Image (cartoon, rainbow, N blue to C red; front, side, top):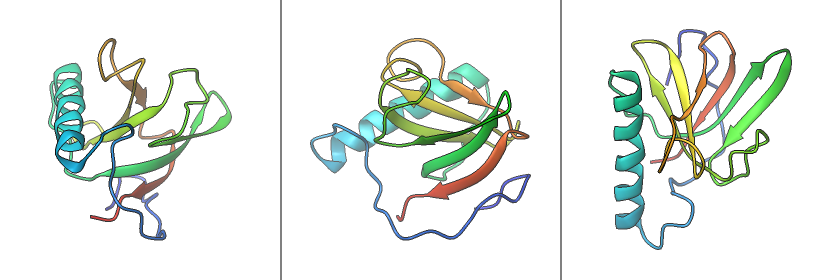
Length: 120
């Protein structure tokens, strides 16, 4: 995958999952719902990339969001990360934001440092 800032890097293979999903079918349903929420939030299509982790800079601090890990910003477990090519922005969905209530956390394209995708 390539972003506007060419921050994609090689990584060890890591299979796609949705935290807490009991099986692949339920995981796909949950992921589809999060994706739809981001599309409703942005009014634009989400890329097909299955993103595992992003590194970014927020207000001068290096930050990371990784699916399955707790958000350092107090948003609970990261459930999905989505890229909207039309804006170049990334959206982080968690149990607190972007999954059931409130909009997903927005990360601007100029804040991005690295993007890691799941192995499909």
